[in-house]
Length: 522
Image (cartoon, rainbow, N blue to C red):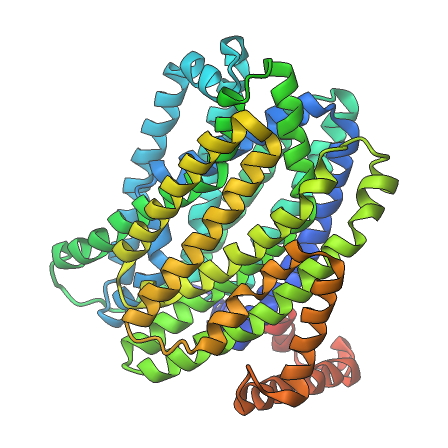
C-alpha cells in the first residue's frame, strides 16, 4: 500500500518506542488521570448501588479477572518478554500473526464454555443459581476484556507505551460515563457490567486499527527460519506465566468466594459484606493499579537490557525502583489511612460501616502486592517464571488455610487478615528467590520491604516511620545509598527542565507540522 510522506512520518515518529524513563512517566501520568476517573466512578457506583448489588458486581468482576488470563494460556502475558526476542531474530510479524489466530480460537472456546455452564457458575460465584442471565452478560464482557488486554500487552511488548496509556485512559473514561449513565437508569450490577463491556469494545476496535497502522513499520524483511523453536521457547515461559497469572488472580479473589461459601450468612447478607469489602478497596486499588503500570513498563526495558547482557544494569535499576517504591508506598498508605474518613464518613455518608475498620489491613496488602510485583520482575528477566509460580502457590495455600480458619470466626475481618498475611508471605518468598538468582538484596532492602506494614501499628508509629524514611533518603543515608539520592535529584531535574521547555515552547502555528506527531505530544 502506498503511503503519503505525512503518513510515513506519522508511522515512523508518532509510535516510536519509548525509553524506560519516558515509559514510566508517560504511563504514570496517563494512568493518574485515568485513575482519577476510575476513582470517581467507584465512588459514584458505591453511592448509587445498594450493598448487595455492589457485592454482585465485585464477584462478577473478580471472575472476569480470574478467567481472562486462564483462557488465554498466558500467551499475552509473555509478549512483554518475547516480542523484542522475536524482533531481534526478524520473525516478529509471522509470530504475531500466529499468536493472534490462536488467541481468537481460545476466546471463542472460553466464551462458549461459559455460556453452556452458566447455571453452575452462578452458584459458584453468588450461591444463587437463578442468576444465570448475569453470567450470560459476563460471557460477552469476558471476551471483550480479553482482547482489550491482548492489545495492551502487544503495544507494551513493542514499547509503544503512548498507545497503552491512551487505551487505558480511554477505557477508564468511557467505563465511568457509560456505567454511571446506566446506573441512573437501572441501579444494578448489570448496568456496571454493560458499561465495562462497551468500554472494552471501543478499546478493542481502536487497538485493532492502531495495530493495522503500525504493521508496515513492523513488517521488515524477515529471515526464512522455522518458528517451532521460538514457539517452544515462548510456550515454556507462557505455561508458567499462565499458571502464575491464574494462581495470582485466584489469590486476589479467593477470600471473597470463601466468604460467600464459609461465612454461614444468608446470600443477601454475605453479598452486603462483599460490597463493604469492595468499598474498602476504592483507595488502595489506585495504588495497586499504578504499581502495575510501573511493573508493565519495567519488564520490556529490563528484558531488553538482559538480552543484551547488561545484568548489572538490570539489578541496579530494579533495586533502586524497589527502594524508592517502598518509600512512596509507605507514605501513600499513610495518607490513605489518615484521610479515609472524608470518603467513608462524609462522601459515602457512613453507608459502608465495615469498610473503614479493615482499611489499614487492605492498605498494607496493596503496598506489599506492588512490591511483590517489582521483585518478581527479576524472576521474569531470568526466565524463572516457574519459581514465581511456586511462590504464588505457597502463598495461595496459606491464604486458603487462613481463610478457612478465620472466616467462620470473624467473617469479613478474618478474610482481610488472612489475605494480608499471605501477601506478606508471597513478598518474602519472592525476595528470597530473587536473592538466590543473584539480586543483591541487603538487609536494608529487606527493612524497606516491610515498612508499609507500619500502617497496622497505629497513626503515631506510621507517622514516625514515614518521617524517618524521608529523612534517611534526604540526609541520613542509613538505608539508602548515596547514588539513590543522586539519581532521584538528576531525574527530577531533567523532568523539571522538560516541563519548563514545554511551557516555554512556541505555539503550534510556528512549529513544523511533524512536531505535533511526536510521542511527547501524543
